[in-house]
Length: 92
Image 1 (cartoon, one colour):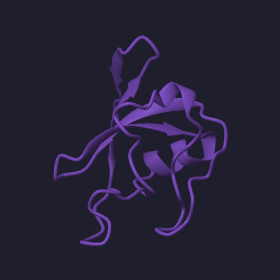
Image 2 (cartoon, rainbow, N blue to C red; image 1 turned 60 degrees about the vertical axis):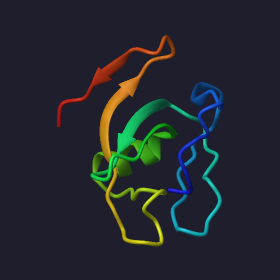
Image 3 (tube, rainbow, N blue to C red; image 1 turned 90 degrees about the vertical axis):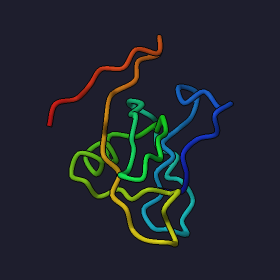
């Protein structure tokens, strides 16, 4: 993943922010949902994702952008975030 969106950005106004390779630009496909994702080092972010990257997130294939460069740390999906700000916890 390239990075979590900035706190001032509305994740519901952004396209998919996931980059397939560490140096790639975000994919920019149409967002289908916003996920709250985090790693074991407590880096968290609201992450807009496209349908393709929803599956990558579900499969545990995304790494934390804040840990990138130091070590590869897997991101876990913690919840789906609704436009009203509610969080729906996802069951694995």
